[in-house]
Image (tube, rainbow, N blue to C red; front, side, top):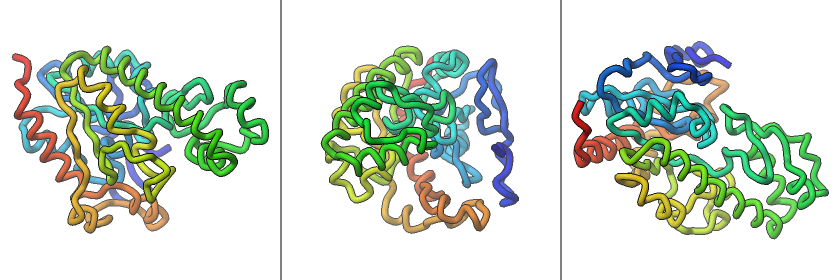
Length: 282
């Protein structure tokens, strides 16, 4: 996987590692021996195809060092089991945690890759018993697998969704407990934060973050300073891929990402949250 450039499109990510973490993060590498804010999250936080993503915008507008620990296709599992990331967040003045999908974590039914959480590894015996009519060796990605399972049986699929939601809340509580009290949650999505059933939304299984509801977020509010809702405006969404860096073969992938205008709006909300919550003394 290329970490530094997208197929000659000219965008360099300056990949770097922190401590003993095995994940390559977006650089330039930041110093951790002075006050900083950490950002953890998925592809949006990383800023794929975008020259100056959310963390860089917040750094520019606040003058505070912002450490981008976003991970392409990352979910909670990419962070919660990484001592380096957890320690880096725990030592930060503030940690912004992007809300990531419930499909990107290992659970009682299936396992995902420890770092590339969109990759399906194996189904448990429980899952194989529920879906005895499915050959799980056909799957590489979790979303493809979930799409097939839903098509096979919406009734059986409800069991899977319930398990993923319970696992997500438990994993998030674990992660937030490790980070400590100076964390905020960031809802950065085209979709509003609500309790609308996932299968009643136009995108269904293509929605991000998948299967997350307002009620699930409410369960986490006691562990965080704030919940920031950054649903892009129609104006930001209308910008599409304008100003993004990608090769012709990646046009479709880029069109599915939140663009520059979306990052600018989200950054403004995060900056406001940073200003609301007094930083620890350096």
